[in-house]
Image (cartoon, rainbow, N blue to C red; front, top):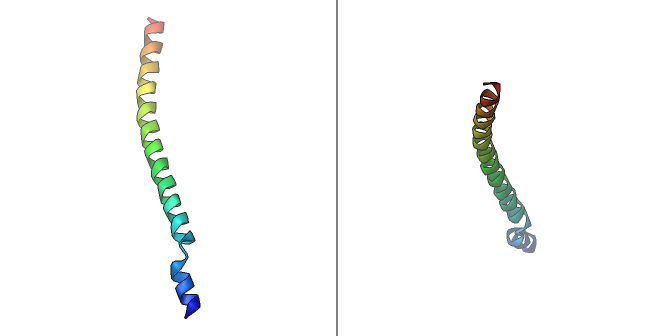
Length: 54
């Protein structure tokens, strides 16, 4: 019975999962921001290239 109580009191696994979920959320947000920024940068560089060619 004591081992079962110990198992339920152990929070290390839950904490590791929470940190993993936080890291995944940050990664998804960073990828979204970078893809949006990448599109804007591509447009800006194309405009600069076109103006240099004129």
